Structure formats: C-alpha cells, structure tokens
Length: 215
Image (cartoon, rainbow, N blue to C red; front, side, top):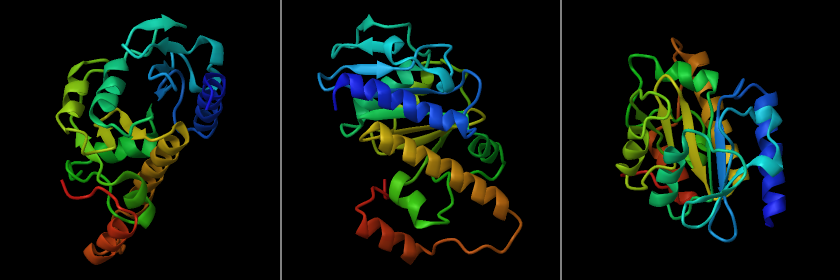
C-alpha cells in the first residue's frame, strides 16, 4: 500500500473505532509500518475521530521523527512491539470500556486475560497477557512488553486499556475489536453457568488456525 493510502486507512479505521465508542476524547493511539521501514503514528493529544492524514507523525527506518506533529507519549510501547514481533505491521491501543472493567476484577487471569468463549478471540488474539498498572507514558510499559519476547500479540494494561499488534492496520483493528467484544461478553455472563470452549475445542482452533498459544 502506498504511504498516502496507509495514511488514509489509519484515519478511516480510527474514526470508525471512535464513532462506535471503542475509545473516546483524545484517548488511544495507532501506528503502522511504511513500505520503507518507517512508521506513521497518531500525534499526541489527538482524537481518533479527527485524525488528519497529513499531520500523522512520520518516523524513518532509524526511528527518527522526520515529519508531522509530535507523536503519542506511548511511542515506546509501540516500539517495543515492533522490536519483538517481526510480523507486526501495525499497533493499536484503545481505552475501551469493557476490557478496562474486566481488568479491574480481582479474579482477572494475568497470563490468559480473556476467557475462551468463542473461537474468534482465540484465532485473532491468542492468549492476552494482563500487565500491571503503569502511569501513562511510563517507559516501564515498553520494558514489560519486551519481557514477553514477542510471544504475545496482545496485552491488557490494567485500569488503562488493550494494546494489539497485527500484520496490517486492518488486522490489528479487527483483533482489538474482538478483544473488547469478548470482554463485554465475559462481563455479561458473570454469575451465570455459561459454557466456554473446552480445552479440546481450544486446541482444535489453535491447530486449525496455527495460533501461538503455548508459551
């Protein structure tokens, strides 16, 4: 995809996420690899509903800001995913309500944050790691992601929001939407005798779709 097309796609998909309430105000940030190995990144203090393709932060392949507005303060978090996951072509971070609520519950599973309720969360996300609370912009978030050594495509920042890496902007957006919908479904079912996927059913999905599941 051309850089012009990628800039437009970032803004169109970000507005879709914003318009459907998956992030709000000036929360959330998004980035994507360019054909020359650089990055396009949403600027600091901007709204997903009003991103300007011409003002996206532009980094070269050495990580130097060469054009556009100053980038999100969560830039180290994005960089950590690109450094540790060779397949990462885009990273999305939202402040989505249901996933944040689920992260606050005392029984939240740190190693496997999302319950396996449908095959699609397994297919698109694998296991989601729940990370502890960090002050927004804290470089320690990036260190925590690096500590996963590229084994997870998605993490949940406790009391903050999910972060997902994908091969493309569209794939990353689809996956983070699946994360939020699975969190919503989990909250809806709390206190009920709901049946999630069995270990055998999970393994069947993992095998068929070649999902990285066991650490």
